[in-house]
Image (cartoon, rainbow, N blue to C red; front, side, top):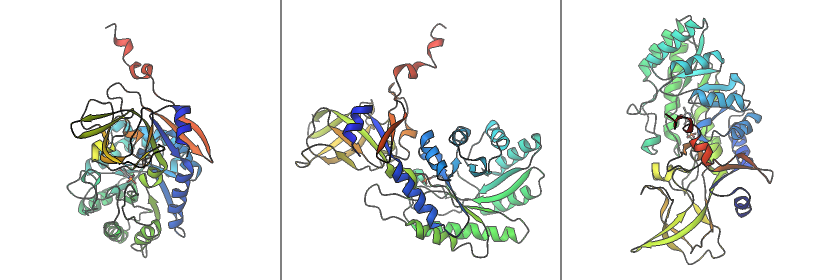
Length: 402
Ligand SMILES: *Cc1c(COP(=O)(O)O)cnc(C)c1O
């Protein structure tokens, strides 16, 4: 990847995505479930650029969406309705209505109250809405607390008893069609055991529902497969698939898997330019043109990203804080990170930035968001132009006269 050339062509800060890497990740996971009916439903929130979604659509991927906006993106990018699912703990009536009208595969319901809303809206529309219930198996996924979702302490899903009650209610309703069951215990998972335990708990619930003639077709195992940011030991896709399939003996269900980070994180690079070096007492800072509004993960989770300096001299390393121009002390990409001496306009490449990077961006400090570039078969193309000042004020200017 010729980052210098890309930076010259498209400017900085810049997101660059290796689409061929995404293809390879998708194929590896799909292959792991070989011999079983499976749908890989790309978790759109990880990187919701339309061209990224379209790339997965072309491979046969479905989409896991957490807002109606994401559902609309999935449609625009060419994902067929029957491979789109809609998850999330707080869906508005308008979102539920549109999801039903668009006839997506199913809505992942996350509470009894929500089940009631879905039923009511489906009744108004005179249809039976396909649903799945998100079960919270109360399993500690051993990941960062902000991305842990399968404990009763977390807001997600419903406990087993509630789930069973909800399935019985749904099965007795004219306007609900329970077709699936769902769990998603967290993100950046690097241990298999919690996933296996969660799958076992949920598979047992499926069997107990089967016994009362509530037959579900889709076993939705969520996403969460971890990736290498630093020196994590990873779950191999094959082992992941085997662990899940091992819990499903006697059940003929289609597996739904909702990876986000696994498919896109290590395909992405955030390229930023050095503005200055500065020293405050004994502390050395490298100030770059990218900031927390472009890539929030270090500020939000204290997340580690590998950073490479594109300099001739790779030696003479010193420990520096790499910071952006935003007026927050939390605006950093790394602290005490070993980098060689840097000059004005040298480039830094921040790795593993393809998931939860651009999408978490904002316009804080009236900074336009970066351009995004795809590289595929050695060719680069723009997939989102850089935001300019006019974009940032477009929704406000007409009110100036008031
Ligand atoms: C965020 C999310 C995912 C994707 O998580 P990754 O860790 O990126 O794989 C999948 N399913 C649901 C319901 C989610 O909220």
